[in-house]
Length: 170
Ligand SMILES: [Zn+2]
Ligand SMILES: [Zn+2]
Ligand SMILES: [Zn+2]
Image 1: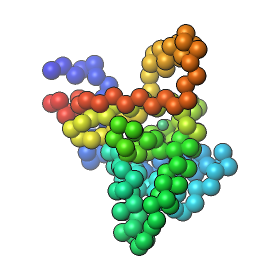
Image 2 (image 1 turned 60 degrees about the vertical axis):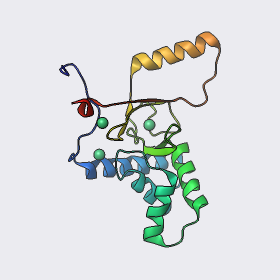
Image 3 (image 1 turned 60 degrees about the horizontal axis):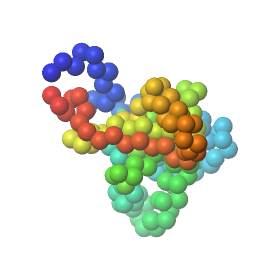
Image 4 (image 1 turned 90 degrees about the horizontal axis):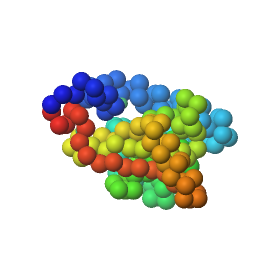
């Protein structure tokens, strides 16, 4: 198989994930400062736990991790933290997996990433479990065109494409 023209956005095992986490947390601080949201220690910790890997994590897994370190934590505590993080665009909910994944664009490159809820398009590998948020101008254009043509007001634009990443096919 020729992958020469493939621009594989999937992270490799062994990459510098600590820097993914610190970039995400720095981005979250910046977004909250700009938008006036309060990144409480609990919300920050939940975000950090979501960022444990690039694989989406379910709310109950998050709850279990929090309980490991804090003793009893009521489930609504976790749900409220996730609601906040989703509303800020720092975390996305993947409905097909009923799981959460950190936004890879938090802190913003001027395109709305991590700055409130924003269109999010994901490639989800069913083998390694990694989900990657991708940006594609042509896809955005096509969706905007469709919305305009149909007079449809999009309220939530999360696209989840499931399959196998280039690495897992090899
Ligand atoms: Zn990483
Ligand atoms: Zn995002
Ligand atoms: Zn994969």
